[in-house]
Amino acid sequence: MNIPQLRFPEFSGKWEKKKLGEVFEFKVTNSFSRDNLNYDSGVVKNIHYGDIHTKFQTLFDITKEVVPFINDEMNVNRIADDFYCQEGDIIFADASEDLNDVGKSIEILNLNNEKLLSGLHTLLARPRKSLFFIGFGGYLFKSNNVRLQIQKEAQGSKVLSISTGRISNISINFPSLPEQQKIASFLTTVDEKLQALKKKKALLEQYKKGVIQKIFSQQLRFKADDGSEFPEWEVKKFSEFIKLYRGSSPRPINKYITKSENGINWIKIGDMKSVDNNLIEKVSEKITLEGALHSRKVEIGELILANSMSFGKTYQLNISGCIYDGWFVLREYEINFNKTFLLQLLNSDYLQKQYKILSTGGVVQNISSEIVYSTNLFKPSLPEQTKIANFLSAIDEKIQMVQGQVDKMEVWKKGLLQKMFV
Image (cartoon, rainbow, N blue to C red):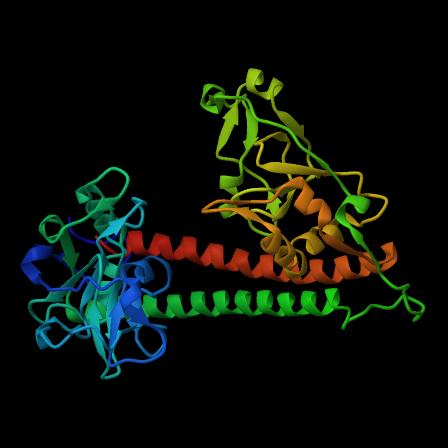
């Protein structure tokens, strides 16, 4: 019926439906690479497709974003004025390895009279007529129906791409300008609240990082409940405090991967990108019982340390299962360390810097057990460790609480983008 499921009560009637190519025209973009850009000085700024994927907000305000300049030695004199970005333009990232990101877009909301070009692997779309309220298009191209159409038009195997010809064929639905303005204003308010929560989380994380630095440099010391000083900290090699348990994985591992719900959790380093607060609670794959017989088994509560890829990071398990051979299991530390304190210590910059200095390898860096064993560890008394652990855990709880609020708002916003658009 071309009518959205969720609508402001003062509006009625069908939305207009057009092919994107009927209401937008595409302008020429440039192919300047990251090597041709800098963040220090210049006359013309440049939108790089990678920043659309990772940095820029849906509604792009140049005064609120960190945007690189085109190096002065690059010739931009031949670029026509019409090819410079204008407010209301939509810029798409035309390539991605992830289907969810191909065709991801931003709308230019405010240029602050600065010169901006759309760059490598981008498509620059400009409305042909005054059909769109500035600020509406950014959300329109994030809506569920439009995103699904773009994904269906994407081509490629390892790297997916979308062309001007194919994206021009998708259908877009839009209401009158007053209704567009109302939708844009409402969703902008939602985004502002979401960004405020993300900023709050970032400030808490920054505060925690600063506190940890002061604690492990001993600028900040805790006192016992009776006000007395705790003993001086011991400093010894990792090997004197903790034992590493090593092992191998069954080969070829694909032979043992299973989709059965009765499979054994298979804990890989590659899954750690989505882990929050250093707590492993889920996995993407499982292995068969036969595979588990040839693997190292781990239980809930154990600590495991990555020796490749995200090397040096230590995680606590909230699930049982089997682990990939890119992990060390930490054992026999209980007499020396409070577990929560140890997890904070092992993930601190103090220890991570030691790993990075000593690590080996090329694209994928690795750390051996010898490297881990040779690093230095601080050991406060157990009562002081408990004080430190409780203090840092309280900050972590606040961070997790804010992250929960962010997650809920993002789910709500996703629902709005599905229900408020056709």
